[in-house]
Image (cartoon, rainbow, N blue to C red; front, top):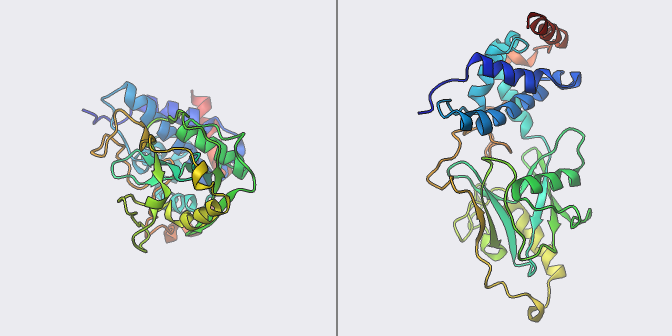
Length: 311
């Protein structure tokens, strides 16, 4: 039974490995620090919990509280943890996202990936840009991580669809030339539960709600905003009917995690995931105690020096 919180020794190791051992500029804002804490959380879930079944699986919010409570460099800010986390959640929804719309040889199907947690929706493979990362480089990296497919030689810089969802810019490059026998499999743990080809004509939304569903029942939150432009792009380049490859043998799913199903051995996190939640929290604005709060880089560096001196 997984009910034990991580011991102090493990938290110290995670803090040292992911938070303290980084360039100084990564410690100059709470946003950057929370991204580091998020990486520590992924490592904890993917490695520590798997190797020690007695450890409790934690949401990012729970893990963040533990890190701020137990890491010497972060402890001075524990009183502001609620507002820090709110601000981070809001910030994540403003970070640009890039990825790819991968089409089969007939242009009739596109590749979608399904998130890990129970009830997750389908989307095009995509993810948030790293600091100073170019759009196309992010798309190549994210598609490789989520599908195992390297699109570097297939990506054309001018073939993309870009929309703004909320405050977030999302750019998806349109990728063609992917062979029918391409093997897909994610390179990350507990992020993608299934990879599948889907007929584009069946992805048409049946309603105007934000979490719209297609005629096949799929949630289309991250798919629907691109469909009109995608169909127009395909129409301009559509192969004549007589020249289209036979796609009748193509099934839906091309990869599925063995230990994750719709019933759920998914992660317990509900507010964020490796690519953020699909629905932003209604109350994402920092509280009044945080709005005029000044981040003290000198104090956190002093705490780090004290921690190293004591070790």
